[in-house]
Length: 514
Ligand code: KIV
Ligand code: ZN
Image (tube, rainbow, N blue to C red; front, side, top):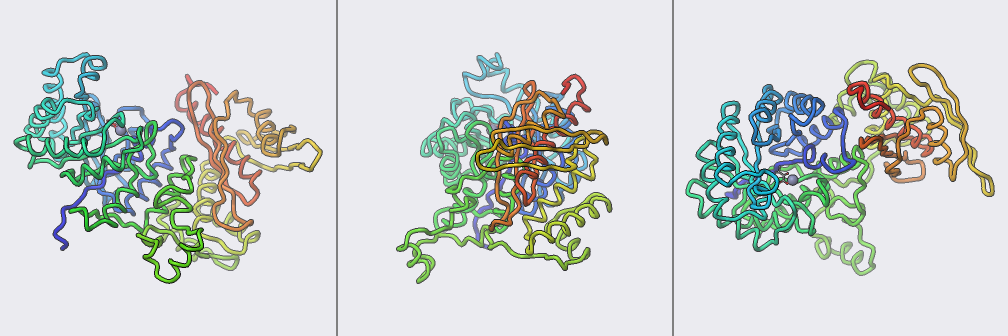
């Protein structure tokens, strides 16, 4: 035992992170992220906001049923119906938390809630008591705490702890706080609230001024014992505090912090890649810990130093956060059992024998074109196979593009729509543009392309390209993903995947139309 306090890592990638415009995930993607968070050994996974929609409810429920090693949490406003819905979604969880919140800043109470401070205290207490009827683990957040008055927060916090709250969260909702000031607020609250020893104090910082991690760490130095954070710092507006930065700061500066986390740091990079790939939000190369350049030394002086003695310029080991040189895991001669075993090792479960067959066929096709197959290749082809097995409405049948200097690129495409093969031909500014135009001739979706991004899955020119396409229609935003060694094919798959998401949303909500 180190004698240090435990710092609870509360991940909100699936809730606050998913609220980021364009970062919405399908139920299957949310489950994959939840499993990656469990492998990371995150203490609490905020799986969603159960009352927000039927889809949110279902995915909180499914995650609560599947996750065994982390506590699963649902957000709920301080309203009876929200709390009941959260409890219903969480009822089969191994370990469940209800997180309820109410604004405590003068500006929010007066203009948004239109409630007096007395009414706010009363509603907060009622909600916490209601949540405690369902679960023992209840978190209360003073929304906009960063702009709330300390005296009022002391009053409401004492009342909700008496009502049964076990975690008190002090969110800097609008990213307004400054490190020293925020840390002092946390210390003052812990010192002044008479029953503060009966709850864990938590922080949840937004990054509007680029200070989310600094504020969170200052709070930890001043007594906070839970940090709410997200993978890659995903989240509303400028995002939340980034999990990887918090965890590695606490670990690397264990001389400074009196706390330790239970995070399996080697799972950080795989989790970061997964979140980036499902949301289509790339990680900037110079991002701390998980950026492609985070451990790359370019200058000769640095390289020389690192070769002579690694610690001259490196404060962390790349392998400790999960950076590996791409490991060749399977090849052309690998059989079905080796493939299945690798899927198990990667924590990938395929729902049916049909999905496994589809994935194995795709693996063999890929191995014919590419001699070394890496874990990242397997993750990508499994995603494609799952989509195919789910019998999506639109599937790529074949594609031919013509592209040569001095000529206008052209695409001839065959797409199957509900089992009927349809062909189209279109010209465009480039082969991808021509392909998207040809698909639109068939689909006539009327959607607007909001984002197109391509990322090489592994290194080398035979790497698969992973493409994200984001489409917007009538205020709805969907992401589509596709991967292939040929990036035009990957682009077509991604566009069709996004259309399938638009169509499936319409099936569930016919009022949306496509
Ligand atoms: O930023 C915020 O205040 C929140 C709360 C719901 C915790 O996300
Ligand atoms: Zn937030």
